[in-house]
Length: 149
Image (tube, rainbow, N blue to C red; front, side, top):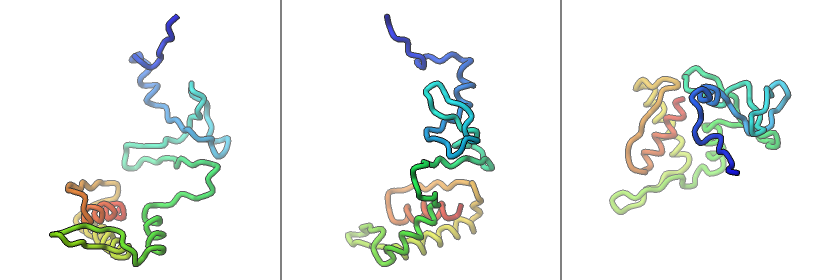
């Protein structure tokens, strides 16, 4: 007897139901977060783990066995800055000569880029598209966009 593959051709009436499920693969921190189990035995969270709206709220996915608290990218950058202030963070070759940027310069330039984006009209939850080759300027712009919010 052949084994049926349940998800090969989903029925149209199942699609709205499947797309509305927010599945958490970790055990909830307390019983109030638990609503029910899905068909695979995973917990389904009451709060969504992702959103497509600018004002949407999400639940941070946390592993209860991890003792570290979540941190932002800016906080992580500051921790790296404290440890590696004078060490090189980025290096690029321009016209046959290596140009190196330390962590402190990288942070300063990224903050300057963030302030520039804000001055140009970048608003919170909007996006920045950076087109170009891998370069120090690309990474500074990318981190600056994150810093700008």
